[in-house]
Image 1: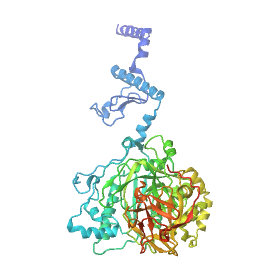
Image 2: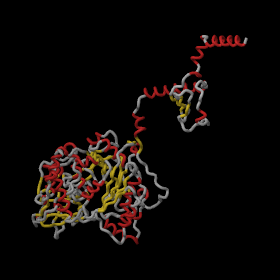
Image 3: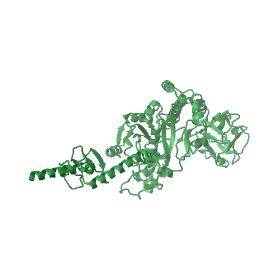
Image 4: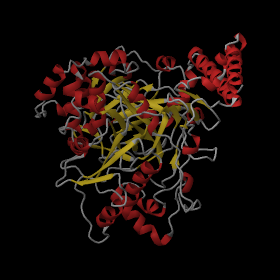
Amino acid sequence: KCRQLLILLLIAALLWYFTPSRRHQVKQSPSTATLQPVSYPIGKNGSSWKLSGTPGRISNNNNNNQSGHSKQQLIITNATMAVDHNIKNVIQDKKKRFQALIRNMQQSVVTKKKIQKLTKQFAFRPVFPKIINVNAAGQNGTGISIIPPGYKKMHNELYRHYGFNAWASRQIPVNRLIPDSRPKSCRDEMYLVNLPSTSIIIVYYDEDLTTLLRTLHSVMDRTSPSLLREIILIDDYSPINEKDGSKLQLEHYLSWLHKVRFFRNKQRLGLIRSRLLGFSYARAPVVTFLDSHCEVNIGWLEPLLQRVHQDPTAVVAPEIDLIDATSFRYLYGPSGLIRGVFDWNLKFKWKVVPRNERLLRKSAIDPIRSPAMGGDIFAIDRKFFQSIGKYDSKVETWEVEHLEISFRIWLCGGKIEIIPCSHVGQVLRSFQPYQPPQSYDDYLGKNSQRIAEIWLDEYKEFFYQRHPHLRQKFVDDISSEMQQRQKLRCKNFKWYLNNVFTDVVFPNESVMAEGKIRSPASASCLIVAGKTNTYIRLITCEHDVSSMIFRFTVRQEIEINGKCLDANPKKGSNILLTDCHRMRDSQEWQHKKHQILHVKSGLCLDRGSSLTPVLMPCSFKRKQIWVFDKYYADVKSKFT
């Protein structure tokens, strides 16, 4: 009976197992399915459960197991054990959402704004420590104009030594705050996150310690650490004053600034050769040259580096703000209005951007093409600087070296641009405190003559018309520079005037007479004894110096070296050399029938009874006869 019962139960079980409805349930049941190796994201924290290829094994890829169970407890040894249907539904739902997200990402358009969010950032903004005294002297760009009576002697001595108010500089913190002088639209500009780093080169000679440290602090405080590779500081063999111990103070101070590399020349090399030495030490792909008495402003570096990164042949300079030499007040004005040019004395000067150049710019903060660089501050691609031959090492003086490098850049494949979003304040000395090894006129003339001979081609004649005494004095060898210019296939100077300095004024467009102003009655000529605020005098015409070469311009001004003759409209007044104000008034003259008439007073230039000419009532006496060396006919003025 037992055997029969067991046989009946077995037959019933087999019949039930092989029914069609049962086979359908078996196919749909998860208890007998093999778990496949695929990962599905579960939860906001990004963890995922992994159903591995090993039957019955489940593991968590996230180390932070939020279930509270150990890994051993999560292992299911029974391969036929059923998986909870709630877990399965969650997995399937997450899988569908994930697949839909992937499809949307693949189909979505990558917009320019999305790329900018990932690849651009705002300019670096410094975070100053709370210990800064915001009420200290000179903070927020203010200056010190009042000198206490007990310090006037010290102030005067320091002013004569440095050419600026070093006493005021010593009262102002080396890490003072200055106003943000950038245009407002620049403050919202974004720059690439992968900009190249730069090596900053600063050369100084006998610089005031506080002014030099303020330069260094402004760079380190207002420059992104990721963009500043190093600061190369070169002392061009400054005299050591053992009394004040400034050299020891500087070296001790610099030991705390880890990005500053300090070098001291064993002999005086001059600005250009010292800069070339600093360039040989530089390691960054972009090199930036700075003056030793300047203060960089907020966001100064990113605009320069971005432009060099976009175009390695672009040599970029910031807008130069003024730090008043008498008070150290930080002064600035509108951006993008002026650019650097030169006159035929090869003297740099600022000039309003012409209309045709303004029309080329789409925005007020677009770069400005500049025929010449002003000051000693610019950034340049390291490889491009090498490719154009770097500086001419035989140009020695600081007052003409920026014209030499400007001509070299434009004629040999580069361009010079002023970047309105980059601002740097610079102290402009009231006078040059360092004496050259020879007379200043010869020293400057020698270097200017070298530039004219190498770069100006046939236009060097305009330079010699203003410096005729230099025609027979050229002794320097320029053969290597001329060969290099030919090897680099540099353009001629006519191309530069036609395409870059298009608003240039030629002598026959601005000058009606020029040369020495001679008094035939005494064989004497006029001469100026200084740069400005000095009276003209008489000297024998045998001398040949640039301080004797005057120009009578179409503006009816008598000009010499960028200054104009001025006079008080009174009988017996001396003739003064002052800055040109372009308002005519007391600087307006007429030259007719060999007389020089002061228009405002109606008096004529008279030789006087001594060596100082004066204004006297007009007559046709010989002592009122004056003759220029050269006169130009049919002058077509560019001025309105």
